[in-house]
Length: 306
Image 1 (tube, rainbow, N blue to C red):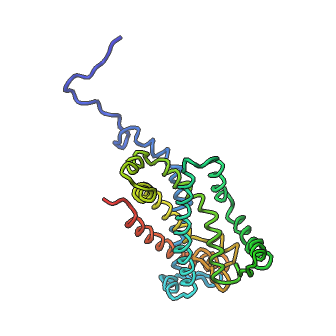
Image 2 (tube, rainbow, N blue to C red):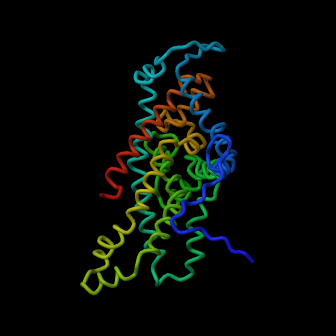
Image 3 (tube, helix red, strand yellow):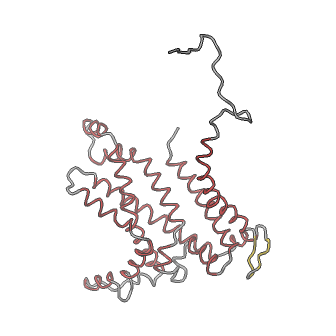
């Protein structure tokens, strides 16, 4: 059998070229990703671009007229928009840190070598996450009903007066925050737990040899190790809270007196209740800008330092 070898110093063999002069085989990868790119363009890029174009129009009944930046100027002067933004900001600043702190403590507890039946307990804390948003919103609306809810009934047995969970502005915000905390704490705890189990045990052993107590090990070993997932959960929770819709829609409908009106709920009301799609699109883009700014700030202060 004859074996062909390339002579030393000879130029390498050239790859076959297509008719347009490109190396053969470079088109194949694009053909494989083309279906995904087409779907992304059809169901992501096109709606985003169309929404921006729609935000430049004013809706008058069935008639749409080009208005330029009028919807964005209206946004700045709209008191209900600022009310919705304020309500969303309060939930973000109060509920998200509390939820993530609970998730971190829960993850540390679930990672304890002294804990028995770990798999069953972890599953129990994660189960709320698989509950549908509307389903658990209705569940909390029933439990926290001021007149016939199970929570007020239990408080009555303890001698506590009924709490106006869904009929008072402050308590309605607390009710929404409780629902969010119940639903998402276990999910974030599982993320923290996965990171905890990946931390090298040598670091804890070295800290123990140096005389570090449980608090110092948590502060100087656990927290730095959790930093990447802390950023991840904070960014995801921030985005999710700014888009909050299902819980206030099901539990309070944005009331009482717009005290639980969120940006997502206000966007929905303008788009699908008043059919003012131009203004709803402007709200959507304002929300996207807010999310982008907060994301940049969070990466700036919590991201890896060079």
